[in-house]
Length: 92
Image (tube, rainbow, N blue to C red; front, side):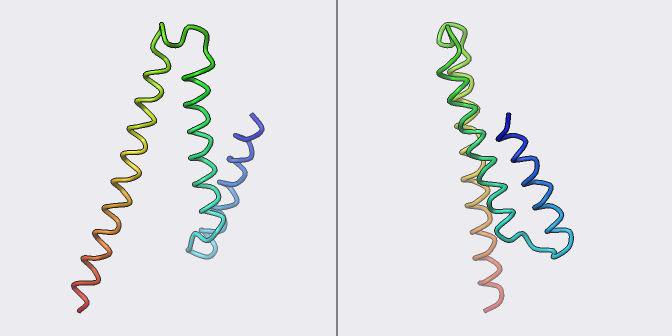
C-alpha cells in the first residue's frame, strides 16, 4: 500500500513539473518506471501467491495480461523510433 501511495505522490509531482516546465525530466522517468515495476510485482504476486491460483486460473490470466502489456510497450517504443526515423529522413 505504501508503494502505491508513493507512486501517486510521484505522479502528482511529475505532472506538476510537466505543467510548469513542459518537459518530463527525471521525475517522469522515475514515475513511469516505478509504475511498471509495481505492475510487474502485482502480476507475480497474483500469479504465485493465491492459494489454488493454478486451479482457478488467476496465474495464467495475470501472466497473459503482463505479456500483453509488454507487447504494447515494445510496439509503442518501436513505433516511436520508426516515426523519429521518418521525421529525420524528411529533414534531409
